[in-house]
Image (spheres, helix red, strand yellow):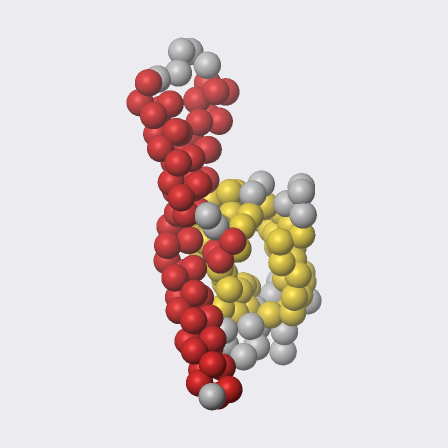
Length: 155
């Protein structure tokens, strides 16, 4: 049994497939969604979304907050930002984290909106780094192993 999972941002559809389960970083804690889940609308925190495919393989996404609508046959994640672990440019994310960290250290002159923007940038960069480091290396190893196996079978 599967459930449709769509992860979308204002710019694009990041993911859209039938999956066995979804794990979300809700603002009140992590939640797991399985097929036939009760209807639910919730806010999402910065964090790692993962989907488990029917074959057991997992895919991971870094999201920067948003909302999730759950129906018994569908999960729609409307994320402020979302990126698949393998798409994350770790060097770029590190530079963004350093810029945001520097801005936080320099202080923001009585501008709560600017402070919130910088804080969100810092959190988004940090989650991208965490997810990218944790999951993209594994995927790269799997691809390299698969590529190696393919080369060996051709010889």
